[in-house]
Length: 208
Image 1: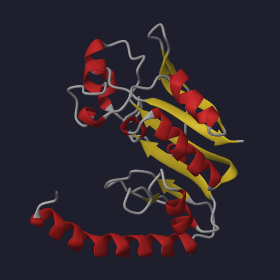
Image 2 (image 1 turned 180 degrees about the vertical axis):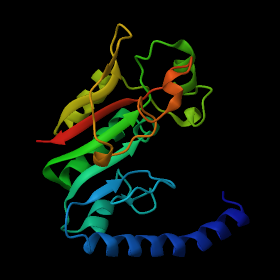
Image 3 (image 1 turned 135 degrees about the horizontal axis):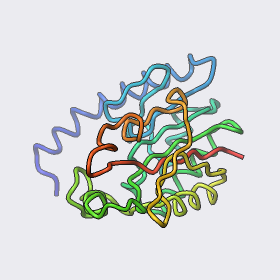
Image 4 (image 1 turned 90 degrees about the vertical axis):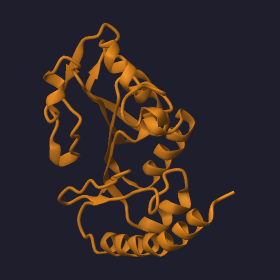
């Protein structure tokens, strides 16, 4: 049962969320060119990209997509360290919903912790229930094969950009930040060159 404080907070926040949705829908309607959407943006804000959070885009609810995008089709989705927080089954639902509201040839760029990372200290940080920030809510640890499969099952062609393979070898393909900026990456996160070797598994899913 919710406390009185929690109930009051939800009542006060609901109008704010409704206002945010109205503002976001207006910006989407006014977008004439390509539509770029950040999923689970929190406070992230990039030029030419529209940030969304669960209050205005619930990945598991097709009606939420319809309410937000109506007849618009998205050219690019970006999700940095979002999909590790939902189950594999829910990831498939979310990706199918994204696919339905994307242009053919559109791309979803996903970055998640890398389950094939060779450093056990890194794995202990990012695994479900790990010691790293936010890891208590992680549902699974992807590797490039697992992330590629869920993308393909949702109707995408998977194109790995940064990943470790089964032998602990790091692979990197040049990618453009304008197509979806990932801060936790080889190029933009200084921790990659520190002893922990922090990196993300980054894969583009192209709608086919």
